[in-house]
Figure (tube, rainbow, N blue to C red):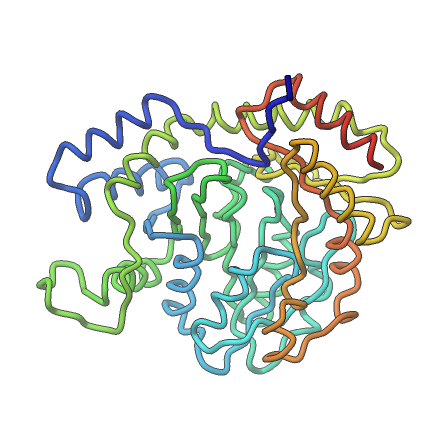
Length: 372
């Protein structure tokens, strides 16, 4: 009998989530109801911040933040090219420009030492990304931002549950944002959450996500240009239950990661992401880097052969600056960020989710090693 496929990712859904969603469906409050503020309160309580603003994706959350901070036409934001494309696309939504700097070859995070050299008179903010659930050197980034009077927006869409020296990811800048796509630590199907202590930013984000309405204004009264970026009660009900299980979910993901690390730590043909001291990692994915003697074609062959064997896998990430429209519209090209490019062409994301057993990890590692 053929072995069952092992998916690359998958949500952790129990009967409690199903019942939570079904309970909302039995009410007339499918949107703009009580589950949205309940979901938001789970974040303010967990993170110790004043404000949490639910929205329909992490991408939407970033867009709202740039509008709230007035990072618009002509402004520049320093960020990393090693991320999912939404982090940089969100900057372009407002007419601003992402300005990339390369990454640290060991941590895979934005290289804080390069940021100040990219700052110009047009720079308004820095967007560090918590890549794969780890965090960059936020002390250095915040120091540069303070010196140069820049805003710091932390993209924590991959890092819910992570802590650095006890401080939760998402709270390490002025504003943070999380995402809840089904491959994330928790899911609402689609969804996002902006978090901040800044009253004015929170006020603007709440208004902008709701068609530009002010609190307590009439349904047809719109104080500013806004969007329908709301999260509905159905999604929020799922999120409420997921948040009640966050510690359990994160612990289970950590166990799967430990199984991989135990089996692959001595494998000389690969390396893994270096994590900072004092990090309590909330794992988003499990990604390894092939050694330098492997080419991108070698990596792609490994991915193709793993898929043929029923093993879900992917590359993580394609460099943003090499996406076609970034090259065409912003003038970026091959060779601009060599550390990012050298990493990106050698990454392998192995199956990683809470449905995996130790036997599944054994099978993945066996197949992967056979193809190296």
